[in-house]
Length: 292
Image (cartoon, rainbow, N blue to C red; front, side, top):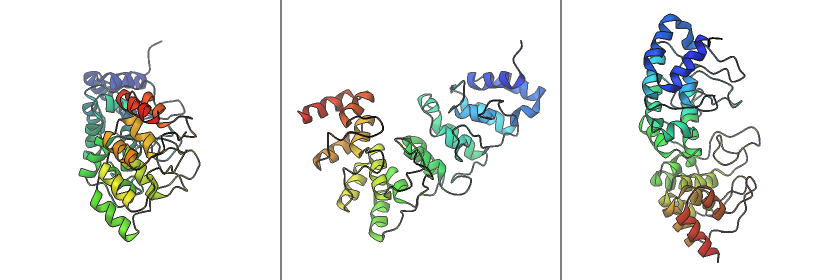
């Protein structure tokens, strides 16, 4: 049985076949706003974001594919219940996916979406896209959103972007703690929004560790934030620094006596084990020596 036009269009999108995609859209223009028949209800633009859909691939020309769809009338901020939350626009999905990141097109995709009117601060102005990029650990995408004008008005975002002066100002004035929070208890590592009961200053410490912002970690610790804090799932800044290979933050945390033996409640592992899971052999060896 021949594949449906929508299925053919999906294959053209994930394979980067610009000619085939243009031909399919010429023959059936409604494809540009059509949705998958499964529970994901994804548009073709969601397949470009390559997050939570199948197949999940990012060709090198994914930004050009996105541009073809948007110029043909795709809805840039279309929502889809892919992960059953309100942040599943193509922009938010793209900046939280390892697939376009590994393909080297994540920040470029963000640019294309923004060039075509994507709401940089989210559908309700809650700061979702930047929060997603930061909490999921995609530094370059987050920095690109900030350059394009995303709102940076809270401790968590300022910390993740390395805005040390702004972090100090927010700490001194006791402001910047309003951040979008979850309404459930599903928060874990690399998830957005932040946990509903978490201390924003502690989350800022974790996010600074994720993005290797040693000066921010220092500023937060000097202001009284525990460098060994664990605002969710007993996961400390040291866990994240070890897993992601953030050497400068690791130095700062170890100098301040961070707990090497803390076991997180999501994976049941220590920072040393997180380092091994992240392929950080040098850091794992260092933590192993330090533990001994």
